[in-house]
Amino acid sequence: MRFSLPTKPFLQLLIELGTVWFFLFFFRLLFLIQNHVFFPDFGFYEYIVGSWFDLITITLFFFPYMLVRIIPLPFLVNKYRKIVDSIFYIPTVLIVFFFNAWDIAYFSFTRKRISFDYFKFIISENEASVLAGDFFAEFWWLILVFILTLYFIFFVFFKLKRNYVDYKDWRPWLKFVGSIAVFVVVGRGGFQLKPVGIIEATNYCSLQNAPAVLNSAFTILKTLTNEGVERKTYFNKRELNSIFNPVQHTDPRNLLSNKTNVVFILFESYGSMYVGPENKESYTPYLDTVLSNSMYFEHGVANSRTSMDGLPAAVASIPTWMNESFILSSYSMNQYQSLPSVLKSHGYSTAFFHSSTNGSMRFDAFSAAAGFDHYYGRSEYPYANHYDGNWGIPDHYFLPWSIDEINKLKKPFFSMIFTISSHHPYKIPNKYKALVKKGPDPICEAINYADYAFHEFWEKAKKQDWFDHTLFVFCADHVGPTSRSDRASIEWSFKIPIAYYHSSGKLPEIRSEETSQQIDIMPTVLDLLNINTSYFAMGTSYFSKYKLPKVVYNQENFIVLNPNKKSLIWNDRMQREWSDSETETIRKLKAIYQHYTHALIDNKMLP
Image 1 (cartoon, rainbow, N blue to C red):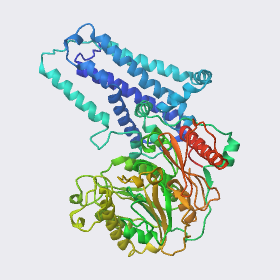
Image 2: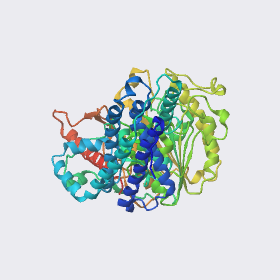
Image 3: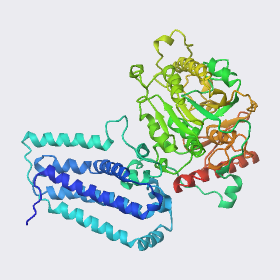
Image 4: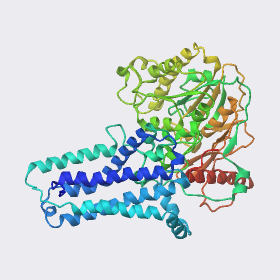
């Protein structure tokens, strides 16, 4: 029986890319066999999701090849067709399968898929060539599999006969345009708000299984333009840990009863210039009343410039000390802890509320990776007509509704609510336009409206049976914009309110000069809840004996903020004389940053 391959270009393209898809399926199987100890519950559903990510990878990598393969132009329909096709097809196949073959062996060392920053690290290592030789000697069988895979793929490729495409006929052109549309949609991962990225894997599987759902070519491509972090080594391990160790243990305070619930409200753009009982120009009178009776840090520090940076800092003690958001980086697939994941292991149910369109800023994916049981976004909100047409469901609707959903949670619970209405374009619902207080910037009235919404939330919350058994945490994600020159300094650019409230009044009173930062929230909450556990955090509890500098990152510079002193700006390329106190601060800063870079690159963010 004689086997004949199709001669139509579009069918041939499907065969070529289908062959690639099949072998990516096979490589994932090898990956799972080689690394099975890391994926004990990886099942058929995860395999299907992984195949979908493979398909996305194929459309992204082979898009240029698709264009030259089926475009009906006269200079590509003759003897040069095979040459042109080979130039685009062969290197792409080599790249895609090399990355995936490499990670079959390398994954066990880092427990994450390789990203572009990994290659920069390898190039900088003097021993790289020696290590590579040992690596290949140990995994010789993988080289053999790689070669055989290429043989079969290229065998099919060269067996397909290139035929003439009538460029004068309209039908090939229609198929060509249709193919572009299909590749664009699949390459984005669908019709959602933003193209699928690395962190979206956690929408479909656990954080533990995410590396096996992804493939290495995809993670390389998605991190190609991201700089990541550079590994810093200032101290040996012993000296490093004597200065600071991110693996910490809680210090239960026994101020509150065990199994106290938590409601954490992250306010959009609530810089201290707009907020606070000490602020004569505050636009949040209702929140200020609560802050006055709270464990309130007037000089709170945002370790973030954006919402995507603020959320990991506040809920997982992970700052963004690099030139890309943690959520968008390859490190988002690291194994790490957060408040919901730690509390869930102690019997808490967890939920995240954000009324924007699902997929916005990838918070749904991050919340899944961070360990939240439930996500409530615009799609889950039952009244679609409340959508503001721009950003999401206005706060005065969404915040009181979130209480209804919190009431359905099993106690004890940890619920996090991220507000949206003080985000640009600052749309004020009609019934509040005559009520809001205006200010020098458009955000002022938006914050004042959001405070009305908070008042409705708070009054409703006080009527719930869980209110007196709940710790409330208040924090801003970052500082909003301002046109005021007296509020444009570095200090004001990162100054936010941070507060802890409990109706018992048992929380300590904070002195006006004391500071806290977003990455200190997770350790502090764990101490207040009397949780007895070890954890990994880049910040420290308010109750900790370790007093670390409050640090923000801006344009590759570290800025140490202190309300009583001039801010210290440092990077490791600076050449200048430092005072004794500055030298000690920089010593601590170096230790923190060394831990940070090593933890991200080596995927060591667990206790």
